[in-house]
Image (tube, rainbow, N blue to C red; front, side, top):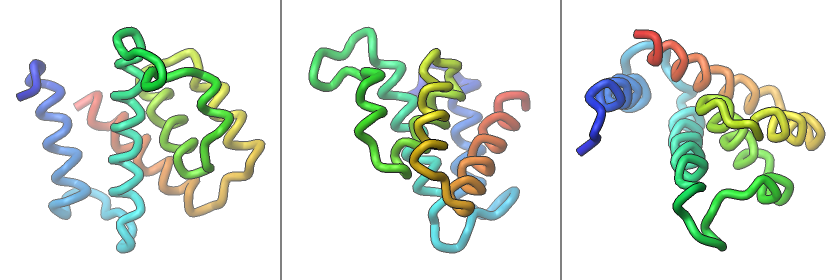
Length: 119
């Protein structure tokens, strides 16, 4: 059970959008759904930084060793939580190359999360 009803409500709406067919539809291949999950995992990992011990703790250096798709999820998660590493992740992602489909997926997920945060 989530301690915050607002967060639970937002997650329920997000799940409805990506799993239940509401709102703007994700690509049929499920990439947006998986990307949203990866972004949520990244957000959780970053938020646990103060309590996790090495080797599980989030560290800025880990961004430099990520594949583009995972790095994109972390860039999204870091941006959504307002983390100071968001710009680093974005720069790294741009330096390794961001394909058009991945950029569209990132933008769709970011847009959906941000829209839900103001509802």
